[in-house]
Length: 434
Image (tube, rainbow, N blue to C red; front, side, top):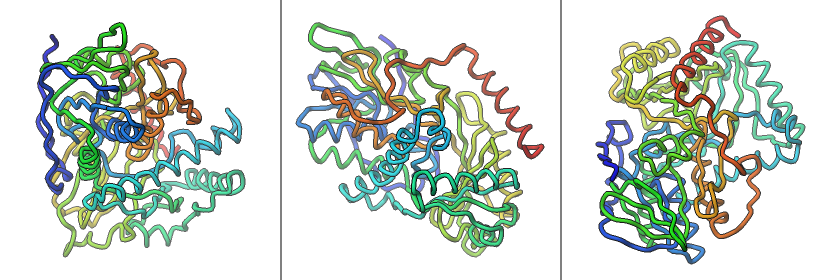
C-alpha cells in the first residue's frame, strides 16, 4: 500500500479570512458508486454536481481537505481567457473554432455566478468587476490595440477597450503603465469560500464527499474499476481524474501527471491599507495583470492588496520568490514601501505545452480534465459540466479542449531545470523591453 500523509492547511490570506468550512469523514471500508471522482477541487465538485443531476451516484475523494490544493490557494481571479490569443486560434484552426473558444470563456465566467447563486455562497464575494491588462511599454500597448481591434471586428466583442495613460493612473494608482486593455467580463472571488461553499452545496443535495482519502491506486475489474485509498475502496463503473497540477501525489494519477508542467505561483498580501498611503490604490476593484512575459498580477481583497506572479520553483515555498514579489510590488506601488506584508503562500499551476486545457478519456473507464494554465477558477468549474456529459456518453463541443490522446511533456524528468531556463530567458527579454 502506498503511504500518503495528508498535508496541513496552508497559511494564506484566504484561510485567515475564510468562513468555517464543512467537515467530511475519511473513507472507511468498501463502498460502491456509479462514478469515483479523484480530487475535491472545483473540477471534481462541479463534476459531481452535474452527475448527480443526471441521476447518477458520484463520490468525491479528496486526498487532503477541501480547498487544500489550487482551488483554495489561487489568486481568486475569475477569467475566461486562454494563454493562446483568439486571433492565433483563428489563424491556426479557423474563425469558428476561435468563436467557440471565446464562447466557452464567457460561459465559464457566467457559470461561476450561477453556482454562487444556486448555493447562496455569500462568502465567495464574487464581483463581476472586469479585468485590466496593464501595458508596461509601447510595444505591449500596440499588441493590445491590435487585439482589441481583432476582437471587435472578428468576434463582435465590444466588452474590450483601450485605456490611456491618465486612465491607467486613475484605475491603478500607478504611473508605471503606458496604457491598458479593459475587459468588462470576469472579476474576482474569495476562492476558498467558493470551493467550500460548492462542497457544502453538493453535500446538501446528497453527494458523498470523503476528505483525507487519497486515491492510491486504480484497478480495472470485469464490470468497472476499484479505486483504493488507505482506509478503504470504491467500486465504480467509471472514474474522473481532477487533480490538475497535484497529479503526482500518488501513483493512481501517474498516467496524467506527465501531461503537465507544475509551475509554482507565489502570492503576498499586505496588511489593511485603510489609513495608509496605499489606501487609494486599485480603486475600481478589478483584477490586474502586467504584459511582461514573467507576468505579475494584483488585486484588492477587502482593503488589502494582493500581489502575485510566477517564478518560484521546487516543491516548497521560496523565501527568495516572496522577496522578489515584495520588491516588484514596491517598485510598482511606492506607496506600499512601509506597508507590512502579512501573508505569503504559494501553489502549483498546471501548465501544458500547447497552452490549452486537456479534457478527454484515458480509456473507456477513466476521464480526465486538467491543465488550466493559470486561469482555472472559471474554466475548471465549467469543465465539471462537460465532464458529466462525457461520462454519460455525450460528445460536447468544447473546442480545442477535447483531446483524443494524452499530450505528454517530452523529457519530463528535466522539466524543472527546463522551466528555470525558459523563465530566465523571459526575465531577460522583459529587462530589455522586448
